[in-house]
Length: 360
Image 1 (cartoon, rainbow, N blue to C red):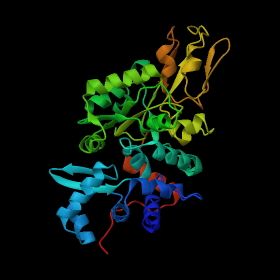
Image 2 (image 1 turned 120 degrees about the horizontal axis):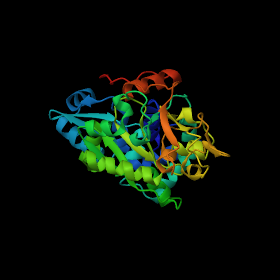
Image 3 (image 1 turned 60 degrees about the vertical axis):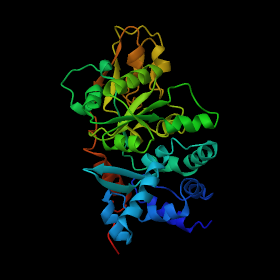
Image 4 (image 1 turned 90 degrees about the horizontal axis):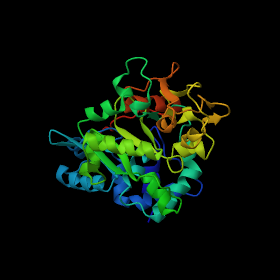
């Protein structure tokens, strides 16, 4: 099996905002070989990073639309390309490594692939995560923990955002599946990865997840909160996904907890936790709940706002309700959409903007 097609695909995937780095060991090529056949690798590298109609792809590649559509549909169901339909017209685009190929491997990940993912993360991806200082995620706490001093914007209201979604899907957390396969798993719930709208359509149509109602999604979020998981979505106003992250397995969160990275490289904290000293009894329950070690307890609990994610997990279990969340006065508002977020990352990295490919 030649490496050439996989090297071309690797270089193509590196054009995305979160790139796909070359390593000395070549582990990234091993991952691609595990996921793609040579023919699939060749085709993917000729797709566009932005959605493109099937007919236009077929014309650009000089392929028959019916045959190409069947091939792309098969690849979509394998989690290799992203697909959605509008008024019966299929659109396809290449998927980045993350969020994309990694998450879409949730149904097929095995011990070998898990080991390759871990090796690549430690060899290269930890360097790629947050190297532009633009957080890819925003933290969205459960609303009951928020001290509403002013009217919250819709994107700041978790339940309202979920109920406004036209389609919702849930899938297993691939990060925790990877860790479990390698004997490093945790006891947190597994089926917690939520997607909305067009992303949910893809998960449902491709069999990577199952469709659920808003009530079911909110129940999952509540159970995740009880378990100590952080609710984090793409750093945009538009709600496309919610990862319920644990500090031991989550790729972005363990960059902080295990690799010493800092909050703003990965998570946009719109809120921060504050302590009412008159109500605080120094019980230290909040110490165990904080996933990033942002709380110290002396005579009273104290929150390090530079570390605080604004997740509200400390507030959930405070027996005297001495902790609550407020909007950060120095907060950074999320981007309008994921495209705008990605465009800004590309700009900071000095990469070319993503564009639909043209016919040669």
